[in-house]
Length: 204
Image (cartoon, rainbow, N blue to C red; front, side, top):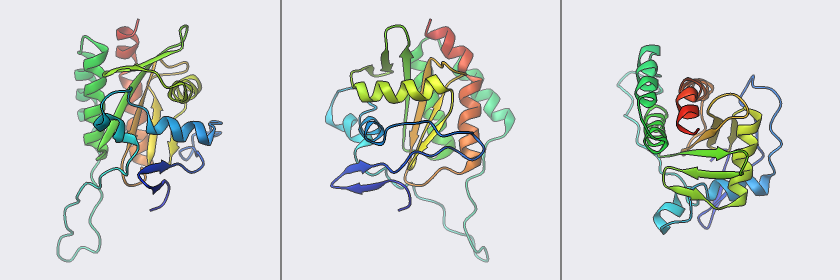
């Protein structure tokens, strides 16, 4: 598989690279990123810890139609659908609910099996998710670099995008078995920016 490689169930992440047309790459240390991606979930039960330390499941695609050389890629949502999704997320009254809805919607739109929204408190250098506090210093450093730069990062088959301009108050991380296409990266970044005011309000 192109990008991330796996050995004994542990994710090995190649060099960080930026999405096309997105400027200079963020200087993220490879060892920090590898450890952080494996532990983006807070310390909890084994099933939760495994989300970033084993290969992501491959979601099935519909078989190609007769006479079609290749199965078409999943169609991207319309602007109207994205606006409705952003409106629904903005209507949530807690960070926990908004984070879970954002994770769920982006996983559905990009066919990801794994998604995680991480909030960050800049004065206190604290990170947390809908599931609880993140204790890992490597995760905090990775979140701070993406949120502080205001630029999304692609690490193997994982995508991490800031929710709002720098310094962002949260990031959204997604991972799947295949690399993200440029239109999908733009979709994630666009929806993240659309809901940024709502997250800013919920994280005050």
